[in-house]
Amino acid sequence: MTQHKPVAVLGGGSFGTAIANLLAENGHHVVQWMRDPQQAQAIRDNRENPRYLKGIKVHVGVEPVTDLAAVITASELFFVALPSSALRSVLQPFAGRLAGKQLVSLTKGIEAASFKLMSQILEEIAPQARIGVLSGPNLAREIAEHALTATVVASDDEALCQNVQALLHGPTFRVYASNDRYGVELGGALKNVYAIIAGMAVALDMGENTKSMLITRALAEMTRFAVSQGANPMTFLGLAGVGDLIVTCSSPKSRNYQVGFALGQGLSLDDAVSRLGEVAEGVNTLKVLKARAEALQVYMPLVAGLHAILFEGRTLAQVIELLMRAEPKTDTDFISPSGF
Image 1 (cartoon, rainbow, N blue to C red):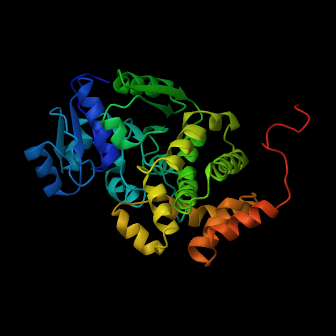
Image 2 (cartoon, rainbow, N blue to C red):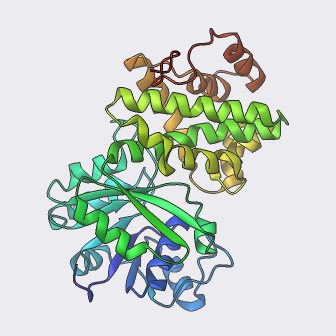
């Protein structure tokens, strides 16, 4: 990628803004596309994105823009931080102009109708583009505040991985590479479901042992599903698996955790989501994941249990009781009880 071409970030949310700031701090010219002209003007005037990252200064090297056609013409590498529900409709009109471009998805979600991950949608829209994903234990505000953070860029395009590493790597942000794009991306999407359960458990004061049990059984469940779809189980022992699961299930800064916490306090699902004021991908992912797991006959008791709480009138205490009554099997699906 030639140095004079701007790096593009598509999306004006918290994660897109945090990544745009990182890129600019590393000396790159960044154009950040957002749909809302008022939001773009507010960032230009005040160097702050108040709706999503209040109190964080947006670097002067980040240029907020609203002309997507111009951005696609000017840039070669795009960090795609659009909501999962909007990604297809935003990029489809420009499909023919994305050939050969590098598209790195930052969005952790699954398309409801097709069960496609975001990078698979990008691939479908732009089959001639070079596709990757970025995922890991990456709370946007902490990245923006320069907390020490690591992430994973995943693609079978090694040059793309190296390019992303060179662009983002800095004193507080470390980028590891993987060729298991599907596993890395699936880990990022699935953990959102379990963060809702974890938030509920904390609100209900269920104790550290219970939270630990929920997180580790969630990891087993995520891995079981992903491996059934061709992912590498070892991916889930890394940043994009257990790393992302831990931070999302244990931090009040996690949107999905916040929804779960509100549910645990007795709010309805609609009220919990309204209180958040942002997209909590886990709620959407839960519906499609439960249906998919049943169709594939993959055993996912926590997914079934959370679905029963949110949509079938069960309580978390009832779900945990059913979990405790189930027949105990091996601790992990990929290590036999004899150790071989």
